[in-house]
Length: 358
Image 1 (cartoon, helix red, strand yellow):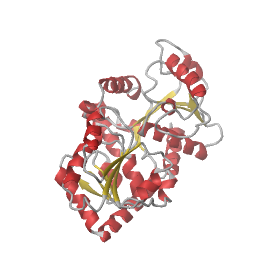
Image 2: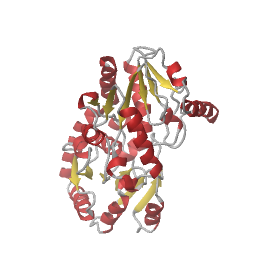
Image 3: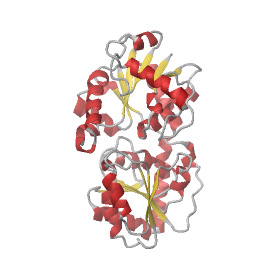
Image 4: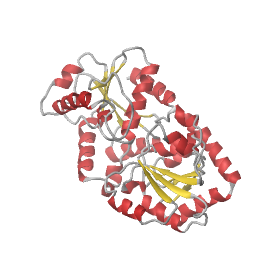
């Protein structure tokens, strides 16, 4: 079997999709026979992972971006030629045209938020996702959904045949399960995520303003700047002492930062899988998260669920965790047990079986 995976997101600044692609390919190659899993464009070596820039050097990145650009030129048969001896071509939304017709086509559905909450995305992202759905997802031979909630969204919103979509949960790197807690001078509650409207950081800050434990704990916000982050940054700059924006935290540093938190809070308005929540659970941290989308599915009993639009519910849930060491321990243990389902090796094994079935 020969599978070619579009890994062009690794050449760009990206968050969840890039993390998925990097770890997925790396673990697929560990599970597969040599040469079974290949990466487009010419990404046999994956380089060092970072969200902020390409995994390759500048000199190695630009020729591959040129190849991606050429592949998207109308009428260019290059992809058909490149996949003539490939059994399965797994496509991403970076390839929007000229999808080959003589090989089996698959893709991963990460979320449907541009349909459900278009106001929380740029118009360019909305158009790109709609184009990808019409030209790739609806034509694909089989699809992976990163959660059952995302699978049901795709069935309901896109009208895709349920038999075509297999739910395979994403994974968590092993470093989170083995993390040594970071030590700081003051205990802290942690949020990790891109600074963008969908992550609902402003409501979290509203909740923190009235917190009973605000003087005893810091609130740490970690993540890169995203779309429409100006308002969030202005709010962070005006916060009272105790709220600290850490900026982008590298993948090497995140496990310890998670493990050192007293509690983790993730009040996102919608998620396809929710990497930050799963990672915090794997690191043994009691979590508060939203009662919507895939987050109850991913968390199970490993988090307190709240209405993300209610600052008072978020505040009350955080206070419950900070007020009770026994409750924190119980939630954290259930979270760690739940996160054991999300090892990348499990995801890779299920994905390899998916490709073999196809």
